[in-house]
Image (cartoon, rainbow, N blue to C red; front, side):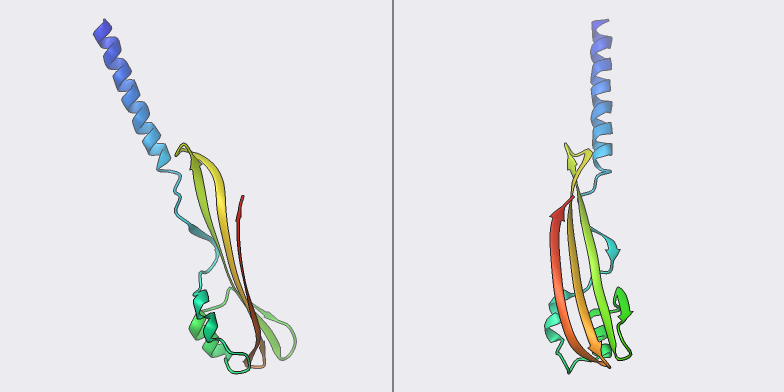
Length: 125
């Protein structure tokens, strides 16, 4: 009888360990894009006011996340991405989330770049 109880406990402990490992695999701490599209911010150095055109900016950075018509001759392109990394408590319970948001705004006057600015925010939720 003692032997059966010991075997049952060992099996139960093994099943519990397998369940723990299976559940912990559900909380992936890999950063993932939850909104927008990633873009190569380091290429921003190639953008020149009054020289770069809409076509050259799109070739450098890809399709913008959003385009906004400001006036007849002015337009703003926004490049934006939000990365989220979910952390786990004890490898199982969803815990805090680290967020990185990267944004680049490019304003055109006619076909040429008039201004551009970048913003990077890191925070936890």
